[in-house]
Image 1 (cartoon, one colour):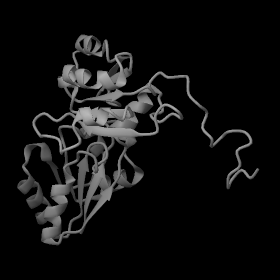
Image 2: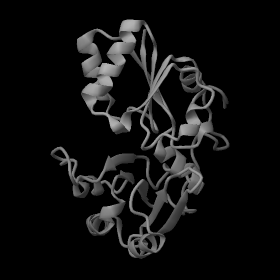
Image 3: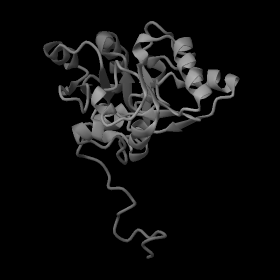
Length: 249
């Protein structure tokens, strides 16, 4: 028996991995994060028990897994996006290890990747940014030392900010001194879901544009010069005359 932590992807049921879909369809028990995972993802399942973890606390979730373990039933524990990012799987894994229950992590498509695809953007451009910072806005839960938004902003790298759209004025005020008021920003609401929507702007005008859309939650903020930038160097990988293992000079 194994508990499979499965990344369901950003929302589109077709963006789950083949392995993830296979496990969802065959596991006798499914525990899914109903607040962020669409029910359509569970179509064609053969599970005897399907549980929405949005209604449970940690101990109740672990008890569901323990009961499945006692029966020898595999569990598809379905999280949104990739479970290793803000998936709260660390605490579940710790409990499973204490009970001697085997587990496996099945990666998924991240919200950041889905948003970049939606915008038709590459998040790392030669000479512009070769670093992507994935973070969240620290409101209810404080950020560890050195990870405050102002600390990260000094790098001026491409930044993806989760759980921050309702705090956009504070985010803009923090980022503008480092990135510049003219720095491009995108706010994407429920990427790949049927009601997906987004706005493009700069740190100077993004607040007004987001207010016009009425985004309040389930949105990702992307900040960086890579967005909408058509002035950058070509990569060395495909440069004519550049020799490498697969294209000898």
